[in-house]
Image (cartoon, rainbow, N blue to C red; front, side, top):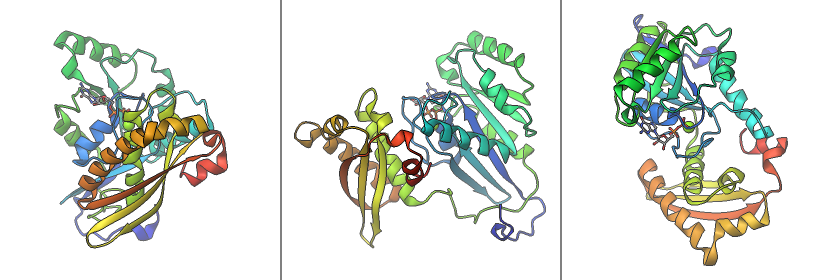
Length: 301
Ligand code: GDP
Ligand code: MG
């Protein structure tokens, strides 16, 4: 963090710091961060690996600033893309003041990979057992006992991110564990990501929701232009896929499939930006973008 980013603050009781949210895909990390920040910053779907970047969400209060990092789920890398996703996880752990390790009541007990990543991390690690709205009291107790043996957690907290159960308790624990420090970012900032990033993420979420199998994983969205006027925002988005056949599927018969994506995306974009949105979408084939470092770089990985 650059010195000059620090905002002078005269309150010695002000707490600020970085909270890293880690865990396997699909356990509810993004749902939890959005719940804690109070904004839908991270896209959420029922498919694994929806979150590809490290996304910061900033929660500002009179006497605190909590900078959350939502990270991609931890997986064994299969593509260069995956390796880059795992580097985001690592970098978010390295500057964490508090680590929230999220699991859910379904997770199979194969946590060695995560324990490995936490070696040498000095920040307190909280285990959050999410989705307890789907479990009985006995099942939840059993999970707590199981996890208590696995790692030296500061505390194990059962939660339901969806139903906002125990989310406030997590907030209080975070605050108690943050150092006294002036804010790192201006207090009116919600996130470190530019508006374009969220536009791309919202469209990518609709692709995840509307297509099956390999298609969502082969697709990437690049915002070619983002122009805001008093009345509206004009967004031109390119959807990259890896093969011509995939382009056909994205567009669909008579353009119907892509139209569905566009309508759903526009609705969410308008809610997110609070303005009318004019969205143009183009589909392009970029051979094997997931495996090529220069292409990944262009997409911000
Ligand atoms: P991530 O991959 O860890 O970021 O997980 P997401 O936040 O994208 O959530 C994955 C899925 O789990 C979505 O379908 C969520 O709606 C669902 N989910 C998240 N939290 C809860 C919860 O507390 N209870 C239930 N029942 N479902 C949840
Ligand atoms: Mg996620």
